[in-house]
Length: 83
Image (cartoon, rainbow, N blue to C red; front, side):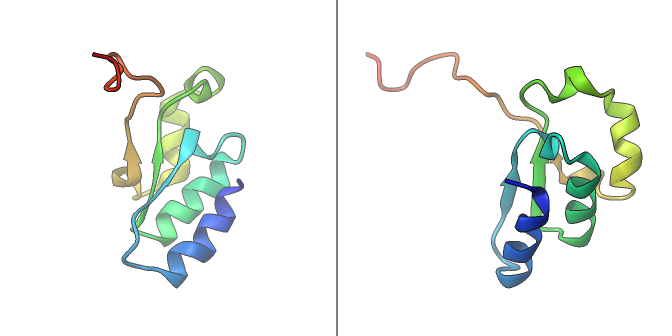
């Protein structure tokens, strides 16, 4: 989903915390704008995104919304359903 669609949801539900995946890949600038406009929207640093761009160059797009970046894993180290 394009990050701009998260803007519509975030504005309609300002108390809802929203996580956009993979820094909005490939719409990085759009993701940064959505994060700057909406303090309830966060983007993760998972997936192949960091292979495509250098994080420092991406941060220039975020301009003040760096706290809207989170790190999570795309995989689990241990399956909670397995005994």
